[in-house]
Figure (cartoon, rainbow, N blue to C red):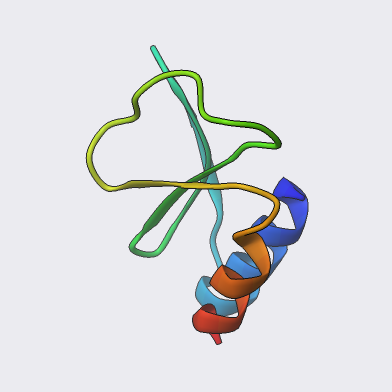
Length: 65
């Protein structure tokens, strides 16, 4: 699912990055910082990081258009 989000963001912004420090952000592109989780997020993420579940990905992608 993460690769689908990455591909859509790449098409919109032309660049997609990955960040890993004390926490992981699966996609950084444009104004978005997104982590895709198949289950519930187990830890807090910094402000501005959107955590997407499998159920919320379709709505996010539609709003991205």
